[in-house]
Length: 401
Image 1 (cartoon, rainbow, N blue to C red):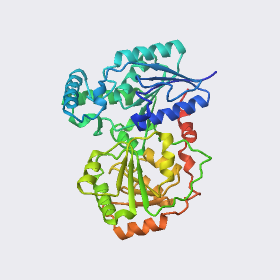
Image 2 (cartoon, helix red, strand yellow):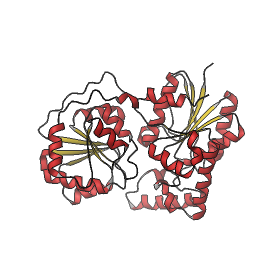
Image 3 (cartoon, rainbow, N blue to C red):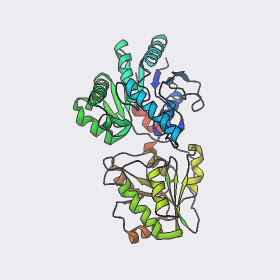
Image 4 (cartoon, rainbow, N blue to C red):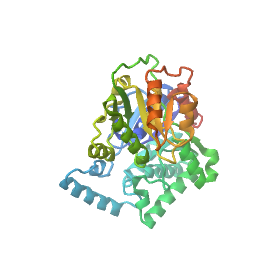
């Protein structure tokens, strides 16, 4: 008899980032392994992104204001944004920017019907939005034999995202209640990084036995063969978002790039960090380019036309492998990483995958590194497939009834 799994995830649209890509990959792999997979999500969760005979979609109409999904750029947009925030603050019991906080009734009813009619034994809920995780515990209470796997992708009450640190005392208390309920009532908890696991277990040591790190992972193209990139200029490429809180790294890096002149070109591909754009503009750094979001399948050409790939890691997350790391090793490009010592730095240095720098980057050492690694072959002894979806799914399968 085929096993069935319901996955509650707000979005699978690639434009919505790492969390969406995470469950695209795991859902598809489960379907390939002959599980019946039911995906429950908001309006933009549809088979445009995943099409498989073993995958079925159930959509809820989210009440989250669309205007809050965009950064306002003019006066009218700013007024609309401000009014939407005020309305959301008034209606939400907890975090203002929790996209599913007003969708409780519809989601719970949809899940209850789905579980009952299809005799579902496994429910996987991925958050943020963190309210989704709590809705999973409500379904668990209705169906006690249900196997509830709660997937925590981001820091919750201890984090700085989603406006958590700006919440009132009562709203913060509400979020802590949701978090405690999820930790207590889940059969299993998966987290997207070792740093998240460390922080979660500091708060809830009793969750030790039920908590597992489930990395984002990557799908490898076995036919891909990396070829040297020939160019008069050294090209360094950063893929994806540059998070806040890493200014201590990118400011000295960009200052160094300016000093090196036109012999080096840096490309930022993906969601724009306006602080970097403004810094580059105000300091007249001419050898830095910005390229807007591209589809994942279109990234290959950018990797083929670069010598190095770049990442800036926020202090406190030095044990977290970002999704861009998996893309970087997939396309076998030497990594320039700005980070503190930790699991990521150790992985790069011990396996000769590139080099690690800090805010005190030395120009001569950096130039020596560029010359040494410019066309250095990738370490073919490195087991990059340990991060493959096919390998990581084994850990998830062990938790499915």
